[in-house]
Image (cartoon, rainbow, N blue to C red):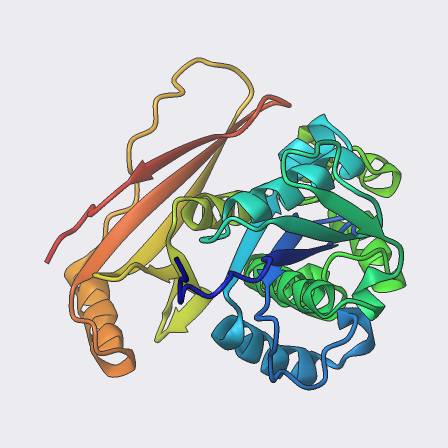
Amino acid sequence: MKTNLKKRSKLVAGIDEAGRGPLAGPVVAAAVILPEKHFIVGLRDSKKLSQKKRKILYKKIKKESISVGIGIIGVETIDKLNIKEATTYAMKAAVKNLKVKPDELLIDGFPLDTQEIPNEGIIGGDDLIDSIKAASIIAKVTRDRIMLEYSKIFPEYAFENHFGYGTKKHMDVLKQYGSTPIHRRSYKPVKENMPTFEWLREKKLLAWMGKKLAALFIKNNGLYIREIDKRVGEITIDIVAEDHLKQIFIFVETIIKRNQIDFQSKPKKKIGSSIKNIIEKTARESDEKHDIRIDLIIVKFLGDGKPIIDHHQNINSF
């Protein structure tokens, strides 16, 4: 008996990564399944494209691909394992995040350590195979966007220019301010510039670092950071963030103690009606959202121990 069912084409996912070499930020991998016949012109290794061209191709790839999967592995895992193993984890996560299971994987460089899905490593694949070229673009644009978000928190480090790579500017800033929680501590230049409590205190950077830690805490809890140190009239709002429902205006306190005695945190800052009125007026002028929340984050330093972060939400609701 004849059938009219058309034989399905083999689904091949190209895989590539971005961020093996930087001193800071995650490693990102992408897996892309392109149609057998696609109409994306200009695909090539992301490193050989301008930032503007990558962004244009990123949109086209997302639109025309059968599926795109992304894997992101942070600095904690990179330091715990090593960059090679972390990259493999990122690639496996990217494949797992595809909405369609591929029949085969083509990977820039070397194959994965498992053949659960048949895969092949292709040296220079990001210059040879369209799906790998597409994956290199997706991975690079995704990682660049992450680093641009970090640049809001750490403007001193100019991540928007070097994206975490070890440029002279980056190395100079590391010596001036020390490394941050988004730096890879297992990398020698970072390890050599790890700030201690005493170093931060001597440099008068504890309050500065406290605000950075508060902003990272907010970002890691899923809030979008709009601005740091927003000046409104005579007041400075430490962090302006938002979720899909509210604008959140956050003040940060840094507490420094040498021992555990009297280390319970209670909000010291009082938000007066005049400050509340200024915040409300600013929110209405700058955004269509009208739900407003004022938070306080207390960052407590106790010697060289890990800082403690207390988040007090809605300290003055209106």
